[in-house]
Image (cartoon, rainbow, N blue to C red; front, side):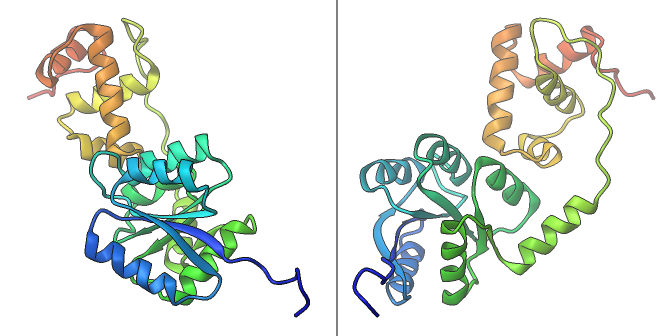
Length: 227
């Protein structure tokens, strides 16, 4: 191979809150061709800081982390440091984890049972502008795309400057759904749901979910169950 034609290894940061898992991934990556681990983070905030400091090509991002989860960290990295791609490497392949991560800007999504070759392919794919998705994730995306789009329910014009999305969240609170159930139904992260709820409380002066339910009934946004 002539000088100058050898491709430099992809510079990678690993983000995972479990020390043993994180160190294991770093060790595995150190054995793989074409990858150089330049940093490791224990949560999303540290991952963003390392991206700012090291400008890696790719972050291998866990999702369930304290302080700042992987979805929020991905959103911040893609907004502030678009030269760095994100590949999710997580235990979870459920819709509640998958779709918020992809919406946040992740270009790849692998589960932690992925082999070394699969990780290398995903990293190379996202760096070349393609998506780095495992076959099972690709199947889930195709299944989801083939599902009929839910028709939005007619919503009474909301008071107090509440947005349409905040009204949806308020109605689901009135239906008795938890933050996790609302996130799953709307295909967003629980952090996003909490942000919507905080906005509702700030705009209306409400202090808790019980007051939010009464507010939804009083304003005609929801109807109490019959019987």
